[in-house]
Image (cartoon, rainbow, N blue to C red):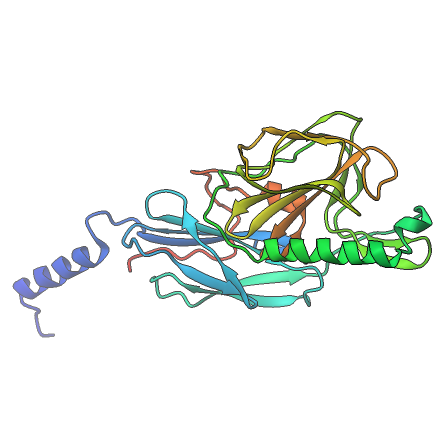
Amino acid sequence: MKKIPLILIFSLLFCVVNAFGEDSGPVARLSVLPSEIPEGSPFLVRIIDRATKDRPTGAFSGMRLSFSACGQGCYEAIGIAPIGMTPGNYSIKLNAGMGIESVPLKVTKGKFASQTITLPPDKVNLSPEDEARTDAEAAEMRALWRKRSDRLWEGSFIMPLKGDFSTAFGVRRTINKTKLSIHSGVDIRGSYGTPVRAANTGVVVMAKETFYGGNTLIIDHGQGLYTVYMHMQEFKAELNELVTKGDVIGLVGSTGRSTGPHLHYSVKVDSNSADPTGMAALPLDTGVEITDAAHIKTGPR
């Protein structure tokens, strides 16, 4: 057996050390949580890449993922599997400079209940004037969802009101035995005048009385994330006001198409309705380690 010169052995060892860097620990890591979600649920992508200052880009099922910094060399984005998405195995496409082209994410069928409710006929069978009004209000909201501002949200989202749900997210509602609708948020029970708090930091982009939602307030948290608060008795925040997570923004009421005091709370991610409980469960606080990841890549670049 031919002996390898000692100088060649030292040269090879030097190259290996340089490839891994002085710190032999991982320099790049990608995490996705949860690894399996039902339709209508949000998910978190976090990339830790100490070796680059380039912000990652990504997409999921035709929807853009907007990444923002979460610390030195840390970037994160929130995506969603919209209601109605066909169950199956999907890929999150990423360009993060780590040699990773796609990450798997499994979407399952949502388990949504059905509900029958009765409302005043004039809130269901609309006059031409009311129909024109609701169409205009819906168009105004759709225009808001398309806007993407800089990130304002800080850490995990909170629920704006403590209480039981009278109607859960995704419930299929039959109204007056004729109309079918899908509940886009959660209805939280509350007494008249109970404070409603901002789910996270952002700017108030709507504070007005609407046909269906009554006193409706919408907060833009940046990166295509919005929260919506409906049926309030009154507002405690104004249009264009910057509010901080936990600030009182209104009081529980029963305005609009409502049968009693409660808060309708919904979340929008990239124009799609997201389960508010799923949003509150995402570990968005800086420094929170993701342990139940769909895919983790570690090692040298």
